[in-house]
Length: 242
Length: 188
Image 1: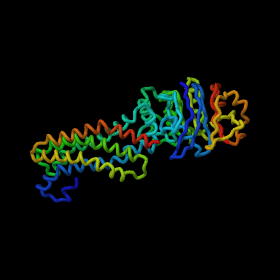
Image 2: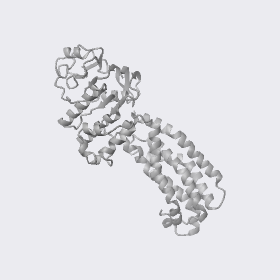
Image 3: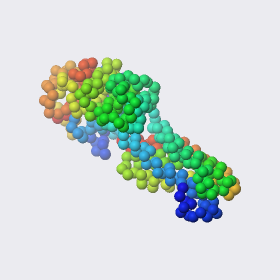
Image 4: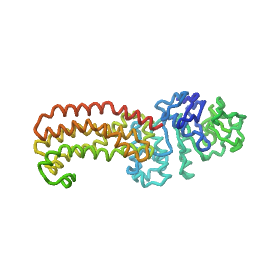
């Protein structure tokens, strides 16, 4: 199911921080969202997840399709790894947790209380929750915080599998996710008053062609997933900030 | 139950005040634990995740209230006869104290969950929570304690018990919607 976001205008603490956000996220696509602190990444994700109603604009196609992962993992320290995961599995309908434990290398830790896990292990458990939701659109806020390189690779693999199974993902992250071939849009852009520029209708291929290497735009952007998400070759929106 | 130590071991006085004291105890034990009811889930982020889950928030707060009642209200209902012995409750009053607590404590948990939802984002919201919830508890306390008192004196208990059951039924039916609504606002 395609997630359509059109002309979204969102306020945080009474101040409009985002305006005119439009994009379409099709099955098999990933959008990576990057930007300086306080620009509104989390606000945008929370609004798309339905936690914060927008001032204007619509989000369609995401009804009962979105799985949201916030900054915090929502783990209960007294419950074991398997119990934490089973809880979410039953909230979202009964699905096996074994594949999710396997995907994030948590099988050996399944009987350990979540409170006794390291920060990185907690995060892996938090991320494995996305697999038991069985939902098509992953909306993830800083999923790689406190993960080591091997775990980031596990995460990238999980996202790749998700995209290959016609899922889609909207991910805000500061780190590179191993995106060696990351493309920065350096199109001539005129930021609106909130610092956002929305270019729509560009395909991945044209983004690849127009991009000129990390950092060259001096800003940040959404990309249609490239490099680490090679399964995504179809059109998407490109957001740039200058 | 330290009341006998503070008011003295006069059995007449204790017998007179014991139904009210038991009800006050129920109310205070309920208030003590409300603070963490939703605040923990808020802090560890699971409230956000529950709000985006397929479960409606109304169901989440109802189950929260049920869990709260099972851990605070129900033990008190079961322990009430024992506490009645300590407080020199008249023998004919035991059954009515238990019944009034059984009918009334669910209302305390459901109203308390509403208070917890109102104050969920606040640091040190516990005091504000008590201030907000206490007035809402007054009708339950009045009819609950009155039913227990009348029962202990061997008088008719139908009217206060029916009022108590009515209050409980109404808040169980309506409060989850209010709790879920304020929770949605607090999660923004």
